Each structure stands twice: as C-alpha cells, then as structure tokens.
Amino acid sequence: MRIRPAAPADLPALQDVERTAGAPFRDLGMPEIADDDPPALDELERYRKAGRCWIAAEEDGEGDGRPVGYLIAEPVDGALHVEQVSVHPDAARRGVGRALLAHAARHAREEGWTALTLTTFADVPWNAPYYARLGFRTLAACELTPGLHRIRAEESAHGLDHWPRVFMRLELPRDDTTSGGPSR
Image (cartoon, rainbow, N blue to C red; front, side, top):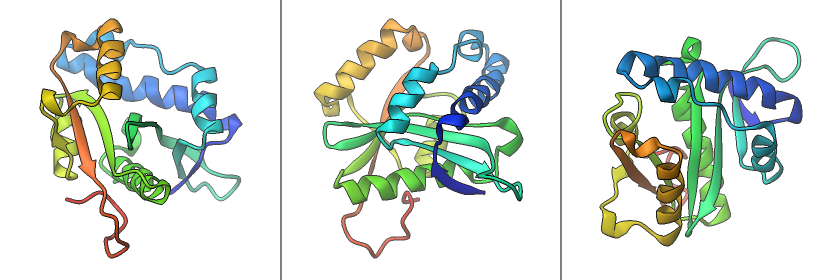
C-alpha cells in the first residue's frame, strides 16, 4: 500500500470506497449514515486541486494502484481539519486509516499547521475510540474555534447530530524527532 495524491481518474473510486465504508453503520442502527451519499465529484475535485485529497492505493503491479481508502482535509483556524477519512471494509484493520492520518499529519506540519482536528461519532468503535488510541483528544465546547463552530452547524444541518458527535484534536510536534505519524 502506498499513500499518494488523488488523480482525477481516482475520484469515482473514492465515492465507491465511501459507499462501501458506510455500510457497517447499518449494523449499529445508523441506516441514515450507511445510506448517505458520498462527496460529489466536484467536491472531491476541489480537495484534489487544493492538494488535500490523498488515497491509500493497493499496489497492483500496473498503474498507480486501486484506491482502498482516502482522506480529504482543509485548513481550519490554524489546524488541518480532516473532513473525511474512509477505508474500504476489505482493507480494514490493516493500518490504512492510520497511514492516511500519518500522511496528513506530515503534510500539516510541513504547511505549519499546529494540529489535526476532526469530528466523529462518539460511540462508534471505529470512530472516537479509534482516534483516541491514535492520540487525538476530545475537545471541550469552550475549546471550539469559530471554524469548528461553523462545521458543527453544517453537520447539524445535515442531521449528523442525531447521534453523539465529538470534536477531536491531535497536537503536532514542531520538531523532526518524531516518527512522522500521529502520537499514540
């Protein structure tokens, strides 16, 4: 597996990854999440053009490899906000999400951002508990920046606050003595 910037031809495959990655939410009583549409191609293209859409590709011996996961992010108030990270269930539990987050963390440090932030479901095992194991901490309401408040309002309008959601943050060390990935 290797992490690389998404190419225009990858974008429909990212939508397929998103659809498939959402299916396990049905088993948790969250069919609305399972059935939610993936990001539109023009939205994915906006992230790609900005240089903030990365894929995890399976090496297939020809071409750039088939996408098995992806991450899109945008700067929000001095941090790189992970808008979405999704992994195809066939590639789950193989470090794909961790590798994508480590890549985003390296990129964020190179760009001078101080942290990674994200929003996620508090009680879904592969959401908040997973990110906590990677070193993210849950933010208190008083720690939310104006940009994170805007994201909360957008998510609420989309119906995501029907289930408990949290904002999480991973501080990024400034020196080069770290391993290059999220802290544990």
